[in-house]
Length: 150
Figure 1 (cartoon, rainbow, N blue to C red):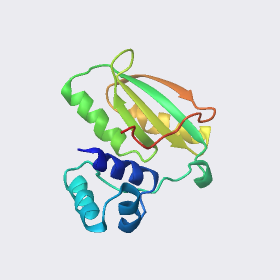
Figure 2 (cartoon, rainbow, N blue to C red; figure 1 turned 45 degrees about the vertical axis):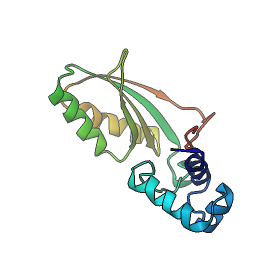
Figure 3 (tube, rainbow, N blue to C red; figure 1 turned 90 degrees about the vertical axis):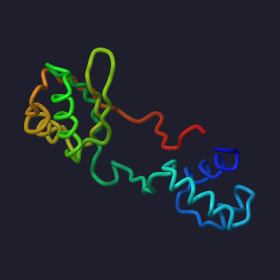
């Protein structure tokens, strides 16, 4: 990946809907070579999808929970079972396998604390092997970035 590819990625991270003409002007290439590079970045998996970023509060999801989960066993079967379950929950926006004092950390969105409680009682703690759940709630975002520092 060279500097032109990095400029393409930086430009698209700030505006993924820009036209190829605008992109080519911004990165200093003519449209055809710019489109070839863009297609190569897509086919190589560097760019793996395009999305619209939606404000959670605007769509009625003001509660952000950071949930730390410990499993009673960390064998492959329990890890896979947990990961498959949380991947199916629409509330879970991110899930990371962690080192340290918890096995997983999740970021999940809810419309209310009651909805969080339902999620906790009806979904998360019913996954086989979950032994401990600790939650912190975000008061407000301070830094939220989607663009990678490339």
